[in-house]
Length: 204
Image (cartoon, rainbow, N blue to C red; front, top):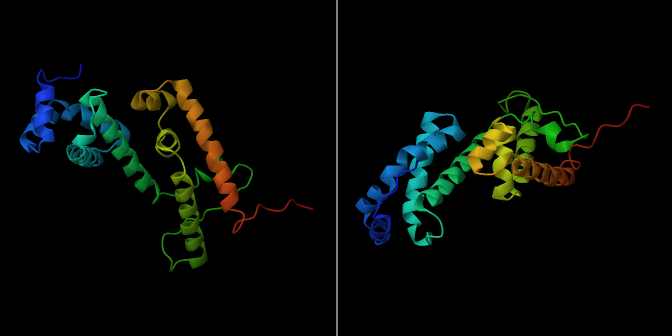
């Protein structure tokens, strides 16, 4: 059960007034649970610590935006999840994209070559850089509600049940969002890829 301060509203008002010690009192009971939530997403202790640290700093700076429509813990948890997903997106931009390419482009198969240096096979290197840039731009058009399950599923390998638990949604809702994300990305990529990477011609 999530801990809860009996005088949370009073402490919250003090923190809103700029009392950093009050914020420490406010966030303290939730810190471990926030870390565990971040760790479930990041699967790396150092990354989880960074996520929680950044999220708690943002929560402190944005306390004036918290209107009390939900519990403070719920509000901060959303910030932690958003921070974690942003970190995953940055991490994924440096990752090979072979696993995404067939999924997003459908019948249009684009070969992404593995080379890490422009001095080694420069044409292949820049082809890979361009394709990663295209995929990154395509992902950016997704709303947070669609990009979150997509990143967790196709880039991090979470199961539908795990994603539903992390995002507080049902499995059918996750399936629906993944379907919408794939449809949007396929349209986006089909308008971007043919200019440089036309589909292969059928054999005569």
